[in-house]
Image 1: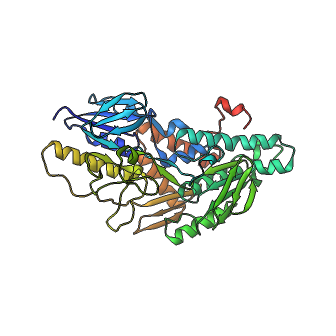
Image 2: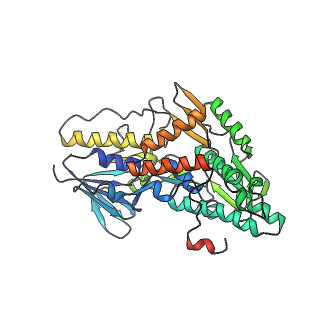
Length: 420
Protein backbone atom coordinates (compact mmCIF):
# COMPACT_ATOMS: atom_id res chain seq x y z
CA UNK A 1 0.00 0.00 0.00
CA UNK A 2 2.96 2.33 0.49
CA UNK A 3 3.39 2.36 -3.29
CA UNK A 4 -0.19 3.46 -3.98
CA UNK A 5 0.12 6.09 -6.71
CA UNK A 6 -2.24 9.06 -6.62
CA UNK A 7 -2.17 11.42 -9.59
CA UNK A 8 -3.88 14.79 -9.17
CA UNK A 9 -4.41 16.84 -12.34
CA UNK A 10 -5.01 20.51 -11.57
CA UNK A 11 -3.43 22.74 -8.94
CA UNK A 12 -6.56 24.73 -8.13
CA UNK A 13 -8.53 24.72 -4.89
CA UNK A 14 -9.81 21.16 -5.25
CA UNK A 15 -6.54 19.58 -6.34
CA UNK A 16 -4.45 21.29 -3.68
CA UNK A 17 -6.97 20.30 -1.00
CA UNK A 18 -6.69 16.63 -2.00
CA UNK A 19 -2.89 16.71 -1.69
CA UNK A 20 -2.98 18.62 1.60
CA UNK A 21 -5.44 16.19 3.17
CA UNK A 22 -3.49 13.11 2.04
CA UNK A 23 -0.54 14.16 4.19
CA UNK A 24 0.60 11.17 6.23
CA UNK A 25 -1.22 8.61 4.08
CA UNK A 26 0.82 5.74 2.53
CA UNK A 27 0.79 7.22 -0.97
CA UNK A 28 3.08 8.68 -3.63
CA UNK A 29 1.44 11.72 -5.19
CA UNK A 30 2.06 13.31 -8.57
CA UNK A 31 0.56 16.78 -9.00
CA UNK A 32 0.30 17.87 -12.64
CA UNK A 33 -0.59 21.36 -13.84
CA UNK A 34 0.16 23.27 -17.03
CA UNK A 35 0.99 26.34 -14.95
CA UNK A 36 3.49 26.46 -12.12
CA UNK A 37 1.23 28.40 -9.76
CA UNK A 38 -1.89 28.05 -7.69
CA UNK A 39 -4.23 30.98 -8.31
CA UNK A 40 -6.58 32.57 -5.79
CA UNK A 41 -9.23 33.06 -8.45
CA UNK A 42 -11.80 34.99 -6.35
CA UNK A 43 -9.48 38.01 -6.46
CA UNK A 44 -8.43 37.65 -10.08
CA UNK A 45 -10.66 40.54 -11.14
CA UNK A 46 -8.66 42.80 -8.82
CA UNK A 47 -5.53 42.09 -10.86
CA UNK A 48 -7.49 42.85 -14.03
CA UNK A 49 -8.62 46.19 -12.60
CA UNK A 50 -5.25 47.33 -11.19
CA UNK A 51 -5.97 46.85 -7.47
CA UNK A 52 -3.56 43.96 -6.88
CA UNK A 53 -0.36 42.69 -8.45
CA UNK A 54 -0.16 39.18 -9.88
CA UNK A 55 2.25 38.08 -7.14
CA UNK A 56 -0.33 38.86 -4.46
CA UNK A 57 -2.84 36.22 -5.57
CA UNK A 58 -0.67 33.41 -7.02
CA UNK A 59 1.90 31.11 -5.44
CA UNK A 60 4.27 28.46 -6.88
CA UNK A 61 2.78 24.99 -6.47
CA UNK A 62 6.21 23.51 -5.77
CA UNK A 63 6.55 25.85 -2.81
CA UNK A 64 3.41 24.37 -1.23
CA UNK A 65 4.85 20.87 -1.13
CA UNK A 66 8.57 21.52 -0.65
CA UNK A 67 8.47 19.67 2.69
CA UNK A 68 6.45 16.75 1.31
CA UNK A 69 8.96 14.27 -0.24
CA UNK A 70 6.10 12.00 -1.31
CA UNK A 71 4.73 14.72 -3.62
CA UNK A 72 6.18 15.22 -7.11
CA UNK A 73 5.07 18.29 -9.05
CA UNK A 74 5.11 18.25 -12.86
CA UNK A 75 4.70 21.29 -15.11
CA UNK A 76 2.94 19.60 -18.01
CA UNK A 77 -0.26 19.59 -20.05
CA UNK A 78 -2.59 16.60 -19.87
CA UNK A 79 -4.26 15.66 -23.16
CA UNK A 80 -6.00 12.41 -22.25
CA UNK A 81 -6.50 9.48 -19.92
CA UNK A 82 -6.08 5.79 -20.78
CA UNK A 83 -8.26 4.30 -18.05
CA UNK A 84 -7.75 0.74 -19.34
CA UNK A 85 -4.08 0.77 -18.38
CA UNK A 86 -4.43 3.53 -15.75
CA UNK A 87 -2.21 6.14 -17.33
CA UNK A 88 -2.45 9.91 -17.78
CA UNK A 89 -1.32 11.09 -21.22
CA UNK A 90 0.83 14.21 -21.46
CA UNK A 91 1.23 16.50 -24.45
CA UNK A 92 4.95 15.68 -24.43
CA UNK A 93 4.13 12.03 -25.17
CA UNK A 94 4.91 10.82 -21.67
CA UNK A 95 2.53 8.61 -19.73
CA UNK A 96 2.08 8.88 -15.96
CA UNK A 97 0.75 5.71 -14.27
CA UNK A 98 -1.77 5.91 -11.45
CA UNK A 99 -3.68 3.73 -9.01
CA UNK A 100 -6.06 6.56 -8.15
CA UNK A 101 -6.65 9.57 -10.38
CA UNK A 102 -8.21 12.88 -9.37
CA UNK A 103 -9.19 15.25 -12.18
CA UNK A 104 -9.57 18.83 -10.95
CA UNK A 105 -8.87 20.60 -14.21
CA UNK A 106 -11.32 23.49 -13.81
CA UNK A 107 -13.14 25.42 -16.50
CA UNK A 108 -12.64 28.20 -18.99
CA UNK A 109 -14.93 30.87 -20.39
CA UNK A 110 -17.63 29.85 -22.86
CA UNK A 111 -18.77 31.94 -25.82
CA UNK A 112 -21.88 29.89 -26.66
CA UNK A 113 -20.67 28.83 -30.08
CA UNK A 114 -18.85 32.09 -30.90
CA UNK A 115 -15.23 31.29 -30.05
CA UNK A 116 -14.19 33.87 -32.64
CA UNK A 117 -15.15 36.55 -30.09
CA UNK A 118 -12.39 35.56 -27.66
CA UNK A 119 -9.59 37.71 -29.17
CA UNK A 120 -11.65 40.90 -28.75
CA UNK A 121 -13.59 39.89 -25.63
CA UNK A 122 -11.24 38.03 -23.27
CA UNK A 123 -12.67 36.17 -20.31
CA UNK A 124 -11.18 36.07 -16.83
CA UNK A 125 -9.89 32.69 -15.66
CA UNK A 126 -6.08 32.98 -15.60
CA UNK A 127 -3.36 35.47 -14.72
CA UNK A 128 -2.77 35.89 -18.44
CA UNK A 129 -6.43 36.86 -18.88
CA UNK A 130 -6.20 39.35 -16.01
CA UNK A 131 -3.08 41.07 -17.31
CA UNK A 132 -4.56 41.20 -20.82
CA UNK A 133 -7.69 42.93 -19.51
CA UNK A 134 -5.64 45.29 -17.33
CA UNK A 135 -3.46 46.16 -20.31
CA UNK A 136 -6.46 46.89 -22.53
CA UNK A 137 -8.22 49.01 -19.92
CA UNK A 138 -5.15 51.13 -19.21
CA UNK A 139 -4.22 51.46 -22.88
CA UNK A 140 -7.74 52.64 -23.69
CA UNK A 141 -7.23 55.67 -21.46
CA UNK A 142 -3.73 56.28 -22.84
CA UNK A 143 -4.91 56.13 -26.44
CA UNK A 144 -7.93 58.34 -25.70
CA UNK A 145 -5.57 60.97 -24.27
CA UNK A 146 -3.88 61.26 -27.68
CA UNK A 147 -6.97 60.80 -29.89
CA UNK A 148 -8.32 63.87 -31.71
CA UNK A 149 -11.39 62.26 -33.31
CA UNK A 150 -14.30 62.64 -30.84
CA UNK A 151 -16.07 59.49 -32.04
CA UNK A 152 -12.96 57.33 -31.69
CA UNK A 153 -12.19 58.89 -28.30
CA UNK A 154 -15.70 58.05 -27.10
CA UNK A 155 -15.30 54.45 -28.27
CA UNK A 156 -11.98 54.21 -26.45
CA UNK A 157 -13.64 55.46 -23.25
CA UNK A 158 -16.47 52.93 -23.49
CA UNK A 159 -16.01 49.65 -21.63
CA UNK A 160 -18.47 46.77 -22.11
CA UNK A 161 -18.71 43.84 -19.70
CA UNK A 162 -20.82 40.91 -20.83
CA UNK A 163 -22.47 39.00 -18.00
CA UNK A 164 -23.80 40.36 -14.68
CA UNK A 165 -22.76 37.57 -12.36
CA UNK A 166 -20.28 38.26 -9.53
CA UNK A 167 -17.30 38.68 -11.88
CA UNK A 168 -19.12 41.08 -14.20
CA UNK A 169 -20.52 43.15 -11.34
CA UNK A 170 -17.15 43.34 -9.59
CA UNK A 171 -15.37 44.36 -12.80
CA UNK A 172 -17.96 47.04 -13.59
CA UNK A 173 -17.79 48.53 -10.11
CA UNK A 174 -14.01 48.77 -10.01
CA UNK A 175 -13.52 50.04 -13.59
CA UNK A 176 -16.04 52.75 -12.73
CA UNK A 177 -14.11 53.57 -9.56
CA UNK A 178 -10.84 53.65 -11.52
CA UNK A 179 -12.28 56.09 -14.07
CA UNK A 180 -14.12 58.35 -11.64
CA UNK A 181 -11.87 58.40 -8.59
CA UNK A 182 -8.32 57.29 -9.39
CA UNK A 183 -7.50 58.67 -12.83
CA UNK A 184 -9.14 62.11 -13.32
CA UNK A 185 -6.17 64.17 -12.07
CA UNK A 186 -3.65 62.26 -14.17
CA UNK A 187 -4.91 63.13 -17.65
CA UNK A 188 -5.04 66.51 -19.38
CA UNK A 189 -6.90 65.99 -22.66
CA UNK A 190 -9.68 63.71 -21.46
CA UNK A 191 -12.08 63.61 -18.54
CA UNK A 192 -11.82 59.99 -17.40
CA UNK A 193 -14.90 60.40 -15.21
CA UNK A 194 -16.95 60.60 -18.45
CA UNK A 195 -16.00 57.02 -19.34
CA UNK A 196 -18.97 54.75 -20.06
CA UNK A 197 -19.12 51.37 -18.35
CA UNK A 198 -21.81 49.15 -19.84
CA UNK A 199 -22.85 45.94 -18.08
CA UNK A 200 -24.82 43.63 -20.37
CA UNK A 201 -27.05 40.86 -19.00
CA UNK A 202 -29.38 38.70 -21.09
CA UNK A 203 -31.47 37.97 -18.02
CA UNK A 204 -33.69 40.37 -16.05
CA UNK A 205 -31.31 41.34 -13.22
CA UNK A 206 -27.77 41.39 -11.90
CA UNK A 207 -26.47 38.65 -9.60
CA UNK A 208 -29.34 36.30 -10.36
CA UNK A 209 -28.03 33.69 -7.90
CA UNK A 210 -28.57 36.07 -4.98
CA UNK A 211 -31.82 36.93 -3.23
CA UNK A 212 -33.85 39.50 -5.14
CA UNK A 213 -33.48 42.24 -2.52
CA UNK A 214 -29.69 41.90 -2.58
CA UNK A 215 -29.71 41.89 -6.38
CA UNK A 216 -31.77 45.08 -6.32
CA UNK A 217 -29.31 46.70 -3.92
CA UNK A 218 -26.42 45.78 -6.25
CA UNK A 219 -28.31 47.31 -9.20
CA UNK A 220 -28.82 50.58 -7.34
CA UNK A 221 -25.17 50.71 -6.29
CA UNK A 222 -23.97 50.12 -9.83
CA UNK A 223 -26.26 52.83 -11.15
CA UNK A 224 -24.96 55.23 -8.49
CA UNK A 225 -21.46 54.48 -9.81
CA UNK A 226 -22.61 55.50 -13.29
CA UNK A 227 -22.71 52.00 -14.73
CA UNK A 228 -25.09 51.64 -17.70
CA UNK A 229 -27.09 48.44 -17.16
CA UNK A 230 -28.54 46.68 -20.20
CA UNK A 231 -30.95 43.86 -19.37
CA UNK A 232 -33.02 41.41 -21.39
CA UNK A 233 -31.02 41.24 -24.60
CA UNK A 234 -28.01 39.04 -25.36
CA UNK A 235 -24.83 40.09 -27.08
CA UNK A 236 -25.05 39.07 -30.74
CA UNK A 237 -21.65 40.23 -31.96
CA UNK A 238 -18.24 41.27 -30.64
CA UNK A 239 -15.68 42.93 -32.89
CA UNK A 240 -12.65 45.18 -32.54
CA UNK A 241 -14.98 48.10 -33.25
CA UNK A 242 -17.62 47.37 -30.67
CA UNK A 243 -20.36 45.15 -29.30
CA UNK A 244 -23.87 44.49 -30.61
CA UNK A 245 -26.53 44.11 -27.91
CA UNK A 246 -29.59 42.56 -29.49
CA UNK A 247 -29.64 44.56 -32.72
CA UNK A 248 -28.05 47.74 -31.30
CA UNK A 249 -24.38 48.36 -32.09
CA UNK A 250 -22.32 50.17 -29.44
CA UNK A 251 -18.88 51.50 -30.48
CA UNK A 252 -16.52 50.15 -27.86
CA UNK A 253 -12.82 49.28 -27.92
CA UNK A 254 -12.65 47.30 -24.66
CA UNK A 255 -14.91 44.28 -24.11
CA UNK A 256 -14.65 41.80 -21.23
CA UNK A 257 -16.48 38.47 -21.27
CA UNK A 258 -18.01 37.26 -17.98
CA UNK A 259 -21.06 35.44 -19.30
CA UNK A 260 -20.42 31.73 -19.06
CA UNK A 261 -18.05 28.86 -18.39
CA UNK A 262 -17.13 25.63 -20.12
CA UNK A 263 -15.48 22.73 -18.30
CA UNK A 264 -12.18 21.20 -19.29
CA UNK A 265 -12.42 18.12 -21.57
CA UNK A 266 -12.11 15.65 -18.68
CA UNK A 267 -15.42 13.98 -19.56
CA UNK A 268 -14.14 13.37 -23.10
CA UNK A 269 -10.88 11.94 -21.78
CA UNK A 270 -12.87 9.43 -19.73
CA UNK A 271 -15.59 8.87 -22.35
CA UNK A 272 -18.38 9.58 -19.85
CA UNK A 273 -21.52 11.71 -20.00
CA UNK A 274 -21.37 15.47 -19.45
CA UNK A 275 -23.85 18.31 -19.03
CA UNK A 276 -24.30 21.20 -21.47
CA UNK A 277 -21.30 23.03 -20.01
CA UNK A 278 -19.09 19.97 -20.51
CA UNK A 279 -18.92 19.07 -16.81
CA UNK A 280 -18.57 15.36 -16.13
CA UNK A 281 -21.64 13.72 -14.60
CA UNK A 282 -20.24 11.95 -11.54
CA UNK A 283 -21.60 9.53 -8.97
CA UNK A 284 -22.57 10.64 -5.47
CA UNK A 285 -19.09 9.77 -4.22
CA UNK A 286 -17.56 11.98 -6.98
CA UNK A 287 -16.26 8.99 -8.94
CA UNK A 288 -16.49 8.83 -12.71
CA UNK A 289 -19.27 6.31 -13.51
CA UNK A 290 -17.84 2.87 -14.17
CA UNK A 291 -14.33 3.98 -13.21
CA UNK A 292 -13.91 3.34 -9.51
CA UNK A 293 -10.34 4.60 -9.44
CA UNK A 294 -11.07 8.01 -11.00
CA UNK A 295 -12.56 11.03 -9.21
CA UNK A 296 -13.68 14.27 -10.88
CA UNK A 297 -14.10 17.39 -8.74
CA UNK A 298 -14.47 21.17 -8.81
CA UNK A 299 -15.59 23.04 -11.92
CA UNK A 300 -14.80 19.93 -13.97
CA UNK A 301 -17.69 17.99 -12.39
CA UNK A 302 -21.46 18.36 -12.34
CA UNK A 303 -22.31 17.59 -8.71
CA UNK A 304 -25.89 17.67 -7.44
CA UNK A 305 -27.05 18.75 -4.01
CA UNK A 306 -29.57 16.77 -2.00
CA UNK A 307 -32.41 18.96 -3.35
CA UNK A 308 -31.37 18.30 -6.95
CA UNK A 309 -29.81 21.71 -7.57
CA UNK A 310 -26.21 21.87 -8.82
CA UNK A 311 -23.32 22.57 -6.48
CA UNK A 312 -22.02 26.03 -7.46
CA UNK A 313 -18.66 26.36 -9.16
CA UNK A 314 -16.96 28.28 -6.35
CA UNK A 315 -13.79 27.78 -4.32
CA UNK A 316 -15.43 26.48 -1.10
CA UNK A 317 -17.24 23.78 -3.07
CA UNK A 318 -14.02 22.61 -4.73
CA UNK A 319 -12.22 22.53 -1.37
CA UNK A 320 -15.00 20.47 0.20
CA UNK A 321 -14.90 18.02 -2.68
CA UNK A 322 -11.11 17.74 -2.44
CA UNK A 323 -11.32 17.04 1.30
CA UNK A 324 -14.01 14.40 0.69
CA UNK A 325 -11.97 12.59 -1.97
CA UNK A 326 -8.95 12.49 0.34
CA UNK A 327 -11.13 10.87 3.01
CA UNK A 328 -12.32 8.23 0.54
CA UNK A 329 -8.76 7.42 -0.54
CA UNK A 330 -7.49 7.19 3.05
CA UNK A 331 -10.40 4.97 4.08
CA UNK A 332 -9.66 2.60 1.20
CA UNK A 333 -5.97 2.39 2.06
CA UNK A 334 -6.77 1.75 5.73
CA UNK A 335 -9.29 -0.95 4.87
CA UNK A 336 -12.10 1.04 6.45
CA UNK A 337 -15.62 1.65 5.10
CA UNK A 338 -15.86 4.56 2.70
CA UNK A 339 -17.61 7.72 3.94
CA UNK A 340 -21.17 8.26 2.78
CA UNK A 341 -22.11 10.29 -0.32
CA UNK A 342 -20.68 13.76 -0.73
CA UNK A 343 -22.79 16.50 0.84
CA UNK A 344 -22.10 20.12 0.00
CA UNK A 345 -22.35 22.65 2.82
CA UNK A 346 -23.07 26.10 1.43
CA UNK A 347 -21.15 28.70 3.42
CA UNK A 348 -22.65 31.76 1.76
CA UNK A 349 -22.43 33.87 -1.38
CA UNK A 350 -20.40 37.08 -1.57
CA UNK A 351 -19.93 39.81 -4.15
CA UNK A 352 -18.40 43.27 -4.02
CA UNK A 353 -19.64 46.21 -6.07
CA UNK A 354 -16.89 48.72 -5.36
CA UNK A 355 -15.19 50.38 -2.42
CA UNK A 356 -17.37 50.10 0.70
CA UNK A 357 -20.18 48.27 -1.10
CA UNK A 358 -20.79 44.53 -1.12
CA UNK A 359 -23.52 41.97 -0.56
CA UNK A 360 -23.37 38.73 1.42
CA UNK A 361 -25.99 36.00 1.61
CA UNK A 362 -25.45 33.41 4.34
CA UNK A 363 -29.02 32.18 3.99
CA UNK A 364 -29.82 32.86 7.63
CA UNK A 365 -28.24 36.31 7.41
CA UNK A 366 -28.04 38.88 4.62
CA UNK A 367 -25.66 41.83 4.68
CA UNK A 368 -25.19 44.77 2.35
CA UNK A 369 -23.19 47.99 2.23
CA UNK A 370 -19.99 48.87 4.08
CA UNK A 371 -20.37 46.17 6.76
CA UNK A 372 -20.71 43.50 4.07
CA UNK A 373 -17.63 44.97 2.35
CA UNK A 374 -15.53 44.57 5.49
CA UNK A 375 -16.78 41.02 6.08
CA UNK A 376 -16.07 40.22 2.43
CA UNK A 377 -12.52 41.57 2.76
CA UNK A 378 -11.78 39.72 5.99
CA UNK A 379 -13.13 36.47 4.54
CA UNK A 380 -10.90 36.72 1.47
CA UNK A 381 -7.81 37.60 3.51
CA UNK A 382 -8.51 34.62 5.80
CA UNK A 383 -8.59 32.18 2.89
CA UNK A 384 -5.38 33.50 1.31
CA UNK A 385 -2.45 31.12 1.70
CA UNK A 386 0.36 32.29 3.97
CA UNK A 387 0.90 35.22 6.29
CA UNK A 388 3.05 37.05 3.75
CA UNK A 389 0.27 37.26 1.16
CA UNK A 390 -2.38 38.14 3.72
CA UNK A 391 -0.31 41.11 4.86
CA UNK A 392 0.46 42.15 1.27
CA UNK A 393 -3.18 42.12 0.18
CA UNK A 394 -4.38 43.80 3.38
CA UNK A 395 -1.80 46.57 2.91
CA UNK A 396 -2.77 47.07 -0.75
CA UNK A 397 -6.44 47.38 0.17
CA UNK A 398 -5.68 49.74 3.05
CA UNK A 399 -3.56 51.96 0.79
CA UNK A 400 -6.30 52.09 -1.85
CA UNK A 401 -8.94 52.84 0.77
CA UNK A 402 -6.93 55.75 2.23
CA UNK A 403 -5.29 57.18 -0.87
CA UNK A 404 -7.89 56.27 -3.52
CA UNK A 405 -4.95 55.20 -5.70
CA UNK A 406 -4.84 51.75 -7.27
CA UNK A 407 -1.46 50.17 -6.70
CA UNK A 408 -0.88 48.06 -9.83
CA UNK A 409 -1.43 50.43 -12.77
CA UNK A 410 1.60 49.27 -14.73
CA UNK A 411 1.60 48.40 -18.43
CA UNK A 412 4.50 45.98 -18.50
CA UNK A 413 4.14 43.45 -21.31
CA UNK A 414 6.27 44.09 -24.37
CA UNK A 415 3.34 43.48 -26.70
CA UNK A 416 1.42 46.38 -25.17
CA UNK A 417 3.46 48.76 -27.31
CA UNK A 418 2.12 47.21 -30.50
CA UNK A 419 -1.02 48.58 -32.10
CA UNK A 420 -4.06 46.85 -30.73
